[in-house]
Length: 291
Image 1 (tube, rainbow, N blue to C red):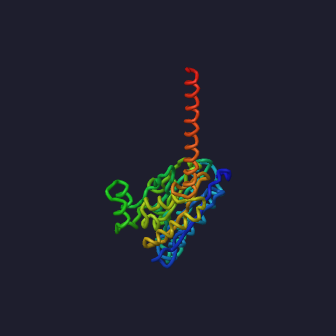
Image 2: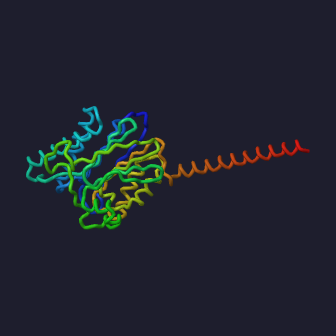
Image 3: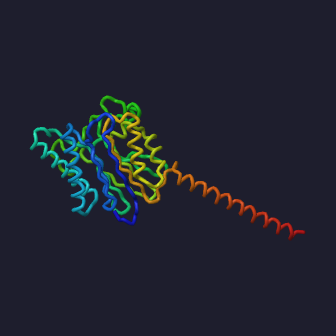
């Protein structure tokens, strides 16, 4: 990602209130344009190892490869999958370990998304929070098909079930029903939010949006506020977020945006007053010409 674009990111990860350990991992590199959240599965030691393996393998491959971004993303996630599986076969206590993840790679003004499982990526643009990933889970599918409301999905007893993961079996990069790939433009006035389900299971999209829209120039504050709000709502799982703000992004509810609106209102009022003054002067000259 060209450094001249100037977007800034911050990551935050917390075990939550009920979990003694954190099986999530996050990776954010503004200069390389690589952002990754990983949620480990398989028990304390195994889940942490699966997530840590993904964090080690994926950025390393992306750094050493070039070419088509989508292919690089596919290969990186597949390498992580097969390394996690290999480690699980070597260690009895790690059998069955896996993870779910969401990866965003920036190239010029495009973002390439690689996604497996029920972590998420949201795009924030023009005051709207939009989920760009699909939850690879029964409950996620029911919600996306309109069979469950967001609130019902968040509290559903099968919420934690997933039918896609990274590491439970060997994979090929171009397998169907494995990696969701998507590319989209990233504008200077937009922002990205990557998160594990510890956030999205605690906070509705409306609450997430309200926190993000208070952004006022420091992505670390936004990342920490999201984690804190998830903990206030119960913190039932590990919570991880990466917030990436474009150089022109300002939350619609931020102090800076309020000041900008006030300046715009003053400028607009001055322009209207000036317009009326010109019109009155012109009308006066017309009337004087008739006299």
